Image (cartoon, rainbow, N blue to C red; front, side, top):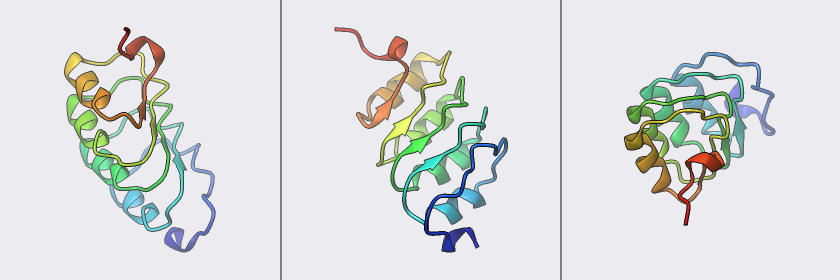
Length: 110
């Protein structure tokens, strides 16, 4: 049913997600905002990375290097504005993708 949806349903209240949900949503195309997710598994991150369009994961305050590695493969824009802590390893992986928007405090300073 979700794969037949032409406009994005509101998923901001979703607090947990399985890898099957992003796989289904990837068929819809368009942007996906999941601001209530506070944590995701590497499997979910891999599935989300395959979605087209902007991906907004504002609720993530920290991510593991495994999740960062998967999300760094996302070809569309990715907004991680809620990050408060990140390991140097995860930061390096995410910073390598210019389409990933990190909080200012984690951006490279000239």
